[in-house]
Each structure stands twice: as C-alpha cells, then as structure tokens.
Image 1: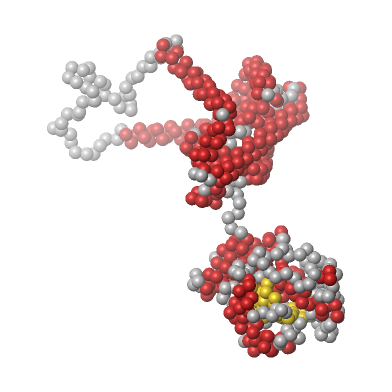
Image 2 (image 1 turned 135 degrees about the horizontal axis):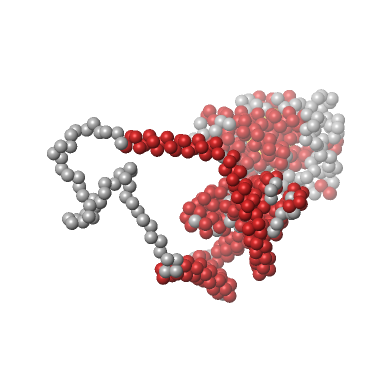
Length: 601
C-alpha cells in the first residue's frame, strides 16, 4: 500500500512540476497586483521607517554639553591592536567599516563533506529506526515479558492490566486518527474536484486532486501544524494557476470550514472516547511535549499523554495525572451539588439537580444525589467542619429543590404515573410472604410500583427523628408516595414528641415512617419508636435510616422493632415496605371517608 501510494504521489508530483513553468507569468502578475493593492500601506510604512531613522540619527549627532576634554587621556586603542599595526579608520554610523564577502567555492572539500553529512545523517537515523523496529517485532513477546517483570514488582496482574490498557488506548487513537484523516483527505479531493468543475470554466478542473488529498490526509497526523501546511499547497496552486480568484477563495473557504468542523466537533468527540483524555489536556500536552522535544514531541504528544494517564490510573502515587488529564468526572453528582452549596451557589445547584432529573428521574435524584448531600452535610456538621450558616443554607436550598420537583409533579405535564401493579393479599401464595430484610447494599427500585386504587385512601405519616435533615428526607419520601396516590403528610422537625404522637391520631395514619439521617439521629429515632409503640401498639411503623452504611442487625435490635416494624435504608425500599403494609387496606377497601388527600405542607 505504501509503495502504491508513493508511485501515485510521484506521478502526480512530476505532473505538477511540469506545469509550473506555464503558470509562472500568472503568478508574477498576481503578486504584482497584490503589491499594488498594498502600495498605500507600504508607502506609509516606509515613511514611518524613514522618520524613525532620521530622529535616531539626529539624536546621535547632537553636541555634548559635558566638561571639556582638554588634557584628558588619549582614547584607548582598539582591541587586538599593538604597536606598529596599521591604524584603523574612525568607525561611526556615518563611516562604517567596509566589509567584503569572499564566497567559497561550492565544490570545495568542506562543502562536499557537509552535504554528504546532511544527507547521510537522516538516512542513518531512518536505518536505525527500521532495524530496531524489526528486532522489537521479532522479539515482541520476550520484550513484553521483560517489561512486565521489570515494572510489576511482583504484581503481574497489575502490570498486565496497565500494559493492555495503554496498548488498547493508543491503538484506538491511531485507528481513529487514520479514519479521520482518510475521510478528511477524501473530502478535500471531492471538494477540490467540485470547485474546479463548477468554477474552473474554460481553464479546466483543479489539477492533481489526488496528490493534494493524500498530502492533506498525511500531514494531518502532525497535530495543529500539519493541516495548515497541507492546505497551503493546493491554495498556492489555486492562486497561481487560475486567472479567476473565485477558485482560490472557494478553496480557502472549504479548508477553513472543514478544519473547524473536524477539529472542534469530530476530533474532540472521538479522541476523548478512544484515549480517555480531556480536550484541554490534549492542547496542554501538545504545547508541553513540543517545548520538550520540538516537532517530534508534537507528533508523539498524544501517545505519551495516554501513557501518563494510564500510569495515573494504576499507580496510586501518580493518581493526580489521571485526575488532571483524564476525561472521567472526578466529582459525582452528589459531590458537585454539595460543593456548590458549600460555595453558597444555590442557582447552579438547582440547575445541576434539574439536569439530573432530565437524564434519570425524580426518585433517582432524591435517592442518589440529595440524600447523600444530606448525609455529607450532617457528617461534616457533627465533626465541627461545617458552620451553622452554611448548614442552614444547604437545608434551605435542598428544601427549595424538593418543593420545585413537587410542583412540577403536580402540573398536567409532570411525570407520568406508571400503571398500577395487580394487588396481592398477604395470604396469596404468589405474594411470597413479607419482603426480605434489607441488606447492606441498597436494592434496585422496581420498574413498576403499586398505585393506590381510586376511591381508596391510605394515610402515611412521616415523622422526623428530630433534625431538619430528617424532615427534608421525609419530604422526599412523602412526595414520591403522594405521586402514587397515597395521602402523605410530614411533621415538622421542631415538633415535640407529644405533638408527633397526637398527629398520628389526627391524621388517622395507617402507616408511620420515622425519618432519620445518620449518624446523629439513630438515638432519637429509637426514642420516638418506643413512644409510638407504647401509645399505639398495633401501629405499622417503618424506620428509614437513609444511606446507612453500618450493620443493620445491631441497629434493628437497638430500635426494638417488632414483627410489624421494618427497617429501610433507601427510598425505593421504603416504598416497597409501605406498599406491603398498606396492601390489607387497599384490598379490603378501607378508607377514611371522602376526605381529600392531604397535600404536602
């Protein structure tokens, strides 16, 4: 393939070289026209230069006003002077020292040697490269094993993964670059052919289209500089060969538009996915490696940066390289929103939450983002790393986000409620008994959730354990339940335990959920459950320890939950438990009358 392309390029190049003498007059005429267009600017430039020279000359010839030089020591002799040497003339800007140039013969011995050295040096380097490449390919398995043994330090699995990852990334990058450059060259060939066919007229089509396409495609392997050099040759031909300047302007517009489209849209998208390097890191790496190794560094900047990113991924001490140069997000959605709230930037935090809802769902936003933000803020507050002002701002901002999602849910164009699943009674053998106990890993939420039948009212009361974070998490759960037909209400975190117990009777609650955000609310949740059990022995209670990461069995024992009590750690599990506890009321058609559903306060 290389030989075939070389033969085509040689034929095209000879053809182009034979045409150059025919277009010499046209090139000289266009250059003269350009000089005529720039005559006014050139005249102004020459006037400025002449004025500057005159001012500089007059300032150097002004008489001095210093002290008299009578009796002063004679001026020092010129360097390298000695007694008896011929006196040199006084050298000044007005009387420069005459210099005569004696060119050496081009056929001298030194010139012949220099030409031979300049010719043989790149040939010798190319020969060494070919020899090394051949021997490295012949012994690639042995060389690979030695490199792995040298870098592994006894961890062969670690080194193998790193080498395979680097090789796969560089291979994908080179293959992607090959396809992009081939498509670029093909587009250039088609564009020049169409331009010459439509605008050439009697002068004929654009010459040597295949040569320019191959040249532009090959030079694109050199980042940033290659496309400019590749486009310069066909533009020069379009400028000198055709009498009509429209072909030159059309070709320039084609190259500019094509380069902007490829470099700004195609390459960032494909290179990021193939190499795992961010767009900014690609630009910075090109500048850095060019400053270190010149043109060779520019050519190898992408593979070398890929190796650095892989090293940062697998070597803990170099993790900062993966963070700085990689394209993977270093902050997840919870960390990003929490960081914005710590910076007191509520607007951007709300925007991030809305973007997450568009990609996922409201329940995923609450479960995977907002509850972890509550957990992080509670943890930092308990350790004294979060002041009261910022904690208050975080709680208010999260409440705003939850209320906005609730308002959008109530709009006619809000989230579509899924079809209700067929109810199963606890005695139904297909029900499989009560749901399994929660495990340390939160289960995935089901695709279809139970919808409360029309005309049936199931009251769910959410009682915060005592903190405002508990109330906000309870608002999320109540909002999800309300969207599925439950009559959900949330008590205030400032309410006393006696007021919370009285609210159970006022709301005629069928199910009570105690909302608690660890680590500081477990003790308060235990006390609230104890008081609820003392006053309402048959009350169905679940305890939500949101995003809890500890052992569940000791915690459940501390909470003294009975057989009817349940312990959940996420919103999806809480909805499943509430559905299970509310099934008898749905099946039996029990309701509290025609009272309207209780909305969120």
